[in-house]
Image (cartoon, rainbow, N blue to C red; front, top):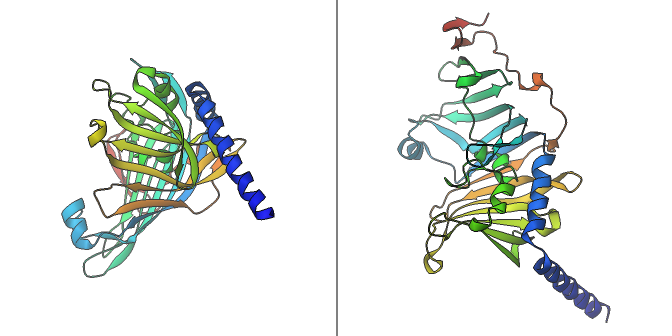
Length: 323
């Protein structure tokens, strides 16, 4: 009898949840996303990136164009510090600006066809004024190369290929949306279709929104939001933009776990990039507790070149070796 009562209660709870979802609306979703976007000031994430299956040396040469090198086991270790996110008015639409300061680090074991290996390190930083880059790699002797430029010529990492790209701070939803924040896209009712039906995505109870192509009005993307995590986005599906009978997913950024980082605020702690036409996937998993809104100081983004690094300073147009 107790088991039967529990089952009936569970079914009733799920039905109640579905009714609540059906009664929700796009305005509530937009409000939740705006709150999340404005709540994240800075992030500090350490994570591991893995390619499964890893590239062989031959595949690296043929597909990636990186000579005869490959990353051992397809695994690289990363650090990401980022601060200064804001929403600003662009020429046509709102844009998600930032991070204003950042530092990324990638460490991997690289090997040659002859099975010779070494530890490769790449660090990039921007402290709000200057961009710096350090590369330590090479065989048979490690070479240290540094680069400095000002803010006008600074380069930016592909943040979409970091945990930020799985979060509410993701941009790159297509040419129409440019760097628009997700909340602003959802407000453009001519290009969004709210889908309140309950769907289970990676054990998340979700609702979704379809984003439409500007001219054909066919879905080119679908974003799923977890109702048990304050409507945090947990999947970004890119579609081919075809009519419904021929529509299919061409790329997915999939969140597989979330970590609570604040009051009603969650951040992706693992995820995968999936191309249904390929056998290889890319996954990430955090290796330490995610740190959010710790008011990172400017020196957190300071990159010091180690001794014997050969540096080219573009600002002063000179090359020197660190003593």
